[in-house]
Image (tube, rainbow, N blue to C red; front, side, top):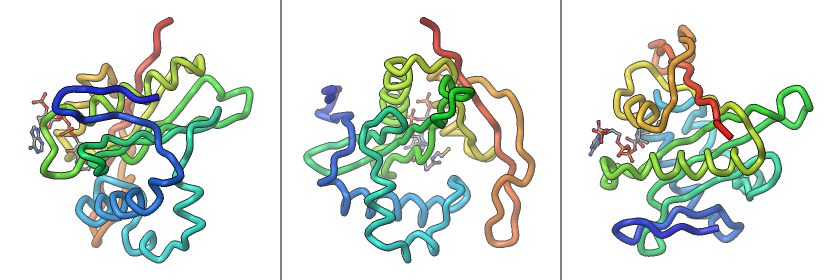
Length: 176
Ligand SMILES: CC(C)(COP(=O)(O)OP(=O)(O)OC[C@H]1O[C@@H](n2cnc3c(N)ncnc32)[C@H](O)[C@@H]1OP(=O)(O)O)[C@@H](O)C(=O)NCCC(=O)NCCS
């Protein structure tokens, strides 16, 4: 799958050849935005190659990873996964939403989220959820624009440098 959008930015599925660029992009995200993600840079930089191969989720029934690419460079990413138990096959979660600093404000994250929602629709998923730290207005604005609404708040969801950060829990129901 590949879609061409304005300014020659392509939104596409991950492939195995993305492994090194993916690792670089993900580590950049974790390093520069430590309170935005549950994963930790210091832990992730020590991970072996096998970890990155596993995390580079190729499109499957269970999960997918999408990249925004410009001029053959990865400039953004977003993943989606679902659990395969028959009681929660209907539900998916979005993780790792990231756009490189110099590319922000062009609704690239929205395109990545829409790719995830299209993937979910193809799998007959009816609800997609995500968590976003409460002091992240850019991300919240993007998710609301995509149709997500807040259904709860997780207190002290993230701990970083002796500070705690609450997370809004957001969801969107997919209409068929
Ligand atoms: C959150 C993030 C993914 C949004 O990506 P994006 O492609 O810039 O998203 P959008 O273009 O839809 O912008 C969202 C909002 O950010 C604000 N924004 C606009 N330009 C911006 C810029 N240059 N830098 C930061 N925020 C900007 C605007 O309020 C915009 O909404 P609007 O266009 O309706 O006014 C991106 O800022 C990012 O990677 N942040 C760091 C990691 C992170 O917080 N991830 C989310 C984890 S839940």
